[in-house]
Image 1 (spheres, rainbow, N blue to C red):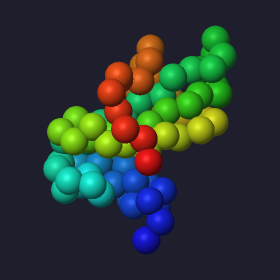
Image 2 (image 1 turned 60 degrees about the vertical axis):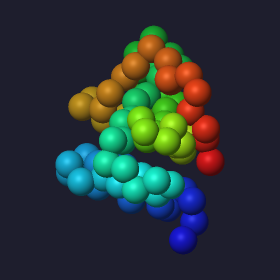
Image 3 (image 1 turned 120 degrees about the horizontal axis):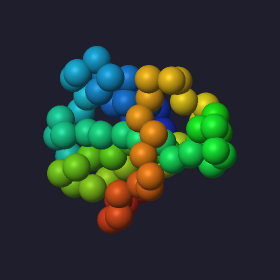
Image 4 (image 1 turned 135 degrees about the horizontal axis):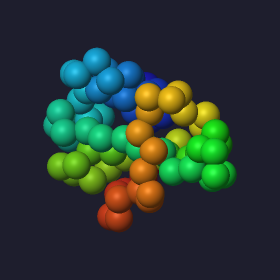
Length: 80
């Protein structure tokens, strides 16, 4: 399975409370979006594992209003 698809499934599962890291199988996942404009309509973001620090970078997304906007992505994440 493609890396991006594994992380997409992990993200969808995480939003339902049961996400698993494709790298280390931990359930300690997080995600966030960083706004590229003042309105927060255009963003980049990521999903990552807080245990192994692997993640997947999301380029140019339009988050839903309920999604997490954060100031910046955490340091030290190894993006696939």
